[in-house]
Structure formats: C-alpha cells, structure tokens
Amino acid sequence: VQLQASGGGLLQAGGSLRLSCAFSGRTFSNYGMGWFRQAPGKEREFVAAISRSGGSTRYAESVKGRFTISRDNAKNTVYLQMNKLNPEDTAVYYCAADPSSSWYSTGYRLYEYRYWGQGTQVTVSS
Image (cartoon, rainbow, N blue to C red; front, side):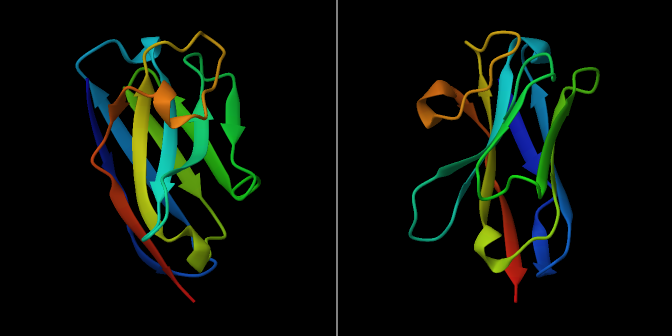
C-alpha cells in the first residue's frame, strides 16, 4: 500500500484548505482511512476517520464542525476539507490506512493504522 498526501499550504486564519490522499497498491474499499496530524514538539494526534463504506465518520473534538472527511472509492482517494482554520491547526497532516477495519467502523488510535503517507504541511498564520 502506498499513500500520497497533498494539498497542504500556508494560509491565514479563517481560511479553508482541502487535503487529498491518493491510495494505491491494494483495493481501496478494503481499508478504513484516517487523518492524523503532528505539530512541532507534540505527539501525533487523531483528526478524522472514515469507514470503508464511507457511511461512518469520526472526528476529534477540536475539529468537529470545521473539518469534513470523505472518500471516493472510484478514485481511490480520501479527502479532508478543512474550514475555519486557526493557528492551532498548524501541523503536518498524515493520511493512514487501516486494513482491519470493518465496513462501518472508524478507528481513532494510531496503532490501528498500518500504512501511512508522507505527510503534508499545513501552516495557519494569525
């Protein structure tokens, strides 16, 4: 499995950004997908997850109502739409794939995800 995240950038507080993660190497719909982030000096943390079906999602409290995770199983891609960004959202964002996910489950623990992308930097200025 290979994951390629893209879409990061530098923007001002209040702005929006959409991250994409292209999946290859296996059957995409067999994997639950998640987004995590890591700010400088901090541990990697859960942001959002989506089930294999796309019908179930889960969000960290800090992003709930601002971020939306989605997937297109025909395009082998998972997205993270980020709105109302603030400086606390500054981090490297990683997409990850969970091979043991059930059709409707959404994992939020790092160890549930076996495959990781290289990360994309998001920087939000005040």
